[in-house]
Image (cartoon, rainbow, N blue to C red; front, side):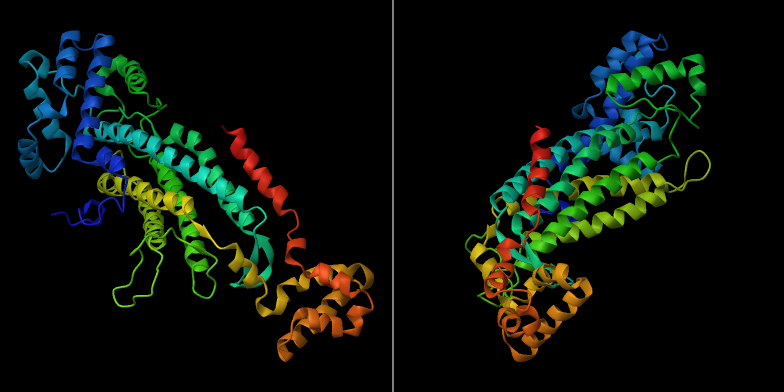
Length: 451
């Protein structure tokens, strides 16, 4: 049985999309290494460095099903480095003449880094698809609730009215920026690695850069200008991007959970019988997706620190940085895919209670409309004087337990500048949402423009 909750049969796919897990499991890992070794042999054969017959033999042998995994595992436990057992197995699967050309001029890190770049590329395809699905779901929510008025809150208190569509359009714009970053990120993170022992390609004499170009093209990875054995900024950027996306999903989950509170009750996670139940309190309908999304986001932010640590390396190969990346890079991709798996259906099935939102607007006797009244008086008496007048009315409303409307009507200073009809117009929340609808549409237009 596995010790990791990510691979737990009990928790299933809660913490990771099975497709992404498959990319980074042992079979996916071996496959990426074998693809790199085979592509290297073909690239070297094309420039006349090794016989083409050897490249063909190596390519035919480079299949996961040909490997004796048990034997490889036993050898790894002895030697402590992961590529040497693979090289021995691959050579065993080739004819004797071809076997001597396996792993020609390469080092362990070349194969691992290039293989991991291939794995990351496949994982990014799934992650991008998930991101697009969430963007579509949030866009739909923003469109549907562009006029659903609710309390805006600052410092966890009622501030002024907004619409729920305005809130979700802010999420949407953030998600769109993450998507915009991805093409540039791929150029810097998905890079071929082939430098040999210390990165100089000395064993290949004057053909090293030609082989590197061929190998990069063959694998569809970016060709580096220089070996990046000890330059990990590209991967740090990838992990930072994953953490930022995870933070956005965490923010959304935190907001959903907060608005699910009994005292607020404006939105709810999708519900089916028994979901979110407490082991001791039969009445509970707890958030289910939100806590896990937030926990994943927390873990992803921690991985950024570790990947930044991996950037600090000595000489031409570090003692400890490679194993650190083997741990955190697959985990980061898997966890983000799991977060998306929870966030997408949560947003698609989100239950929005517009009636409750309107009811909450009246909490506090309408005090969240104080700014609207202040700004109506300000042109007549100045902003500071208007602020003093309205804060006085608001304080009386608090102290006497009356509504803001009642306090304003009873205030002679207010009545000097505003009629009752004007007061009623000013304290209607639907009349004080500013340019919300236009801003929502601007974000939605960006979604349409990207299609």
